[in-house]
Amino acid sequence: MRPIYLDYNATTPVDSKVGEAMLPYVTEHFGNPSSGHAYGVQTRKAIDKARLQVADMLNCHTDEILFTSGGSEANNFALKGVARAYHDKGNHIITSAVEHPAVTKVCQFLEEQGCKITYLPVDEFGLVAPIQVEKAITPETILITIMHANNEVGTIEPIAEIADIAHRHNIRMHTDCAQAVGKIPVHLDELKVDLLSIAGHKLYAPKGIGALYIRDGVKLEKQIHGADHEMNRRAGTENVLEIVGLGQACALVDQDFDNHYRQMKQTRDRLEAGLKKRFPDIRLNGHPDKRLPNTCSVSFKGLKANVILSEMKNVAASAGAACHSEDIKISSVLEAMKVPIEYAMGTIRFSVGKFTKTEDIDMALEEISKTIARFE
Image (cartoon, rainbow, N blue to C red; front, side):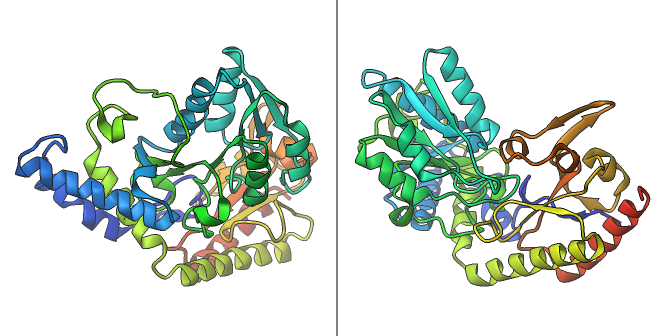
């Protein structure tokens, strides 16, 4: 039997409708979108359609959408692009202590290049306080980058409020929305950010494709040089196959969104209720209300997450700590939230998706219970 998949925050399966939309571009439509003949026109139209599908989902203009190789590239382009384009105005960037490595590693690189980075603390739920953001602003601040929803514990940050603060100070605002899209509404007229990253494989599209929203008027220095693809902002022949997949996945987001949201929340809540009943002393991580509907981060006191997962053969999930012999490395997110070590070392993230069924949860609960019982 294949393990029950409860790791949707790591990656999602490709939706069958996405695969169907992509198939003709595997077997039939192979033209270079830059070619003027019929083969090129066909694939150019496919890219234009996909760009419209992404823009419609986000409520923005098509010329504000740039296709990338994934969320990491989108984040790199946003942060490095702003740092280099606005270096004459300043070199200070504000971020949080709970960002994904695709942001924190870029910030560390920019620090080596002379930028000043402020890493804001979070509260016990993983929330960034807007007042702390405003206090961190200096005359040299050129960018604020705060993720929309945390990949480990699911906490949803007050992005619109932070964006308002940024704009009052004439600062660009970026948010990593890789985990948010498809799980909660992500609309630019509400978030009001200048830059927004998405990753295809987090919303039932293939791996290796993503997009960056760039508000009209925001300057970014080009990162990949060559021909004038992607509105002369990113060189390289377009990945038509996966762009089509991302476009279709974005088009599917709004279809039956409320039902998918309700289903994810019901299965996640069923899992949490079952875990609490079986293990009254477990710790739930993340904000109790301002949290993604699919994410359940739980800590088993005194146990090691990697040991639990190695014994739990029929459930696929992720650890919040890496434990090797006597060395225990806690995730930066749990560390920033000040989760006690005796809990942090036993943290497991379960994340459901739109294909998760009630019976999957019930079977998973039995498997988790049997596994934990071996350590008691």
